[in-house]
Image 1 (cartoon, rainbow, N blue to C red):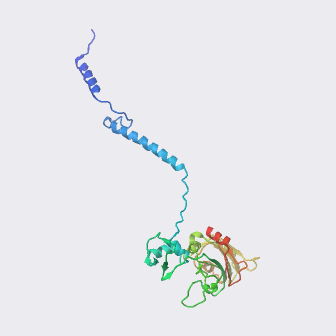
Image 2 (cartoon, helix red, strand yellow):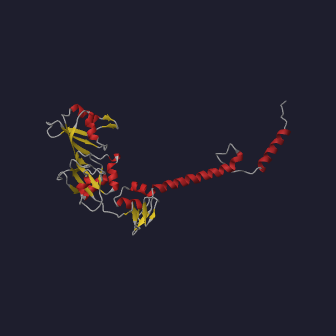
Image 3 (cartoon, rainbow, N blue to C red):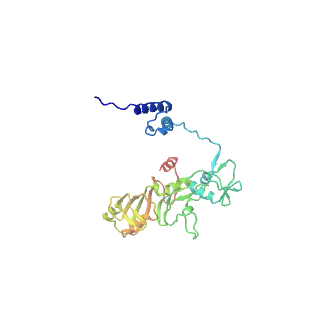
Length: 312
């Protein structure tokens, strides 16, 4: 005789479960929420939102690949105040910003401390009680003689390099960098504050060549150490090149090329090795040479030379 299963309870369970499925409304399906039935509808909304975000990102990427239309500069006849001050030969634009913030500059009689302020044509700009006027940029090269200090004004009334530049132009020009009193050679003058700042900043690494005459012969071993580098009181320093001048017979005269602009750096390098520098002459500065420029005389730079300096 075969065993028979009771059917009453199981049949009732099947009927009740079927009715519950029919009464329960269908909910949208989402892969993210299939394990959480109570979040199916909310999960489906997130999925649709994710698709929209991905589509928008894709469109954004396509938009980035397209080259933006070039902006055309609009000349409204105004000039930024810091540029106006720099063009007047007072200082660089960065230093002009400091003067503006300090309240040292006025426009039409009113002090201006707002960076980015624009000067209109006809405005009166004053600094230090003097009215500023935009000057033409001028650039001069001097072959400095011995016995002149590199400063604009000296309280001790010593000879200054500015005395050698009297009458060369009506604009107020200033020396770029400095050479000490006993050093001769090339010295640049300009009223272009931006270029002066650029040429004297350490990051520019302006190339210079000096002719050095010492009290005794310079050994090859010391020259080798100069190339490898030495430690001075203000840090490590090395030269780019050092060679005997001419045929090398006179070994107490050497040529030194370097980029450093540290104070008295050439003299300090040779003093480190026990040499006394008798004469020091800068023969090349930023690609400019002393060709056809006698000692104590100056000349104005050509436009080609100015363009070269601005590209450094």
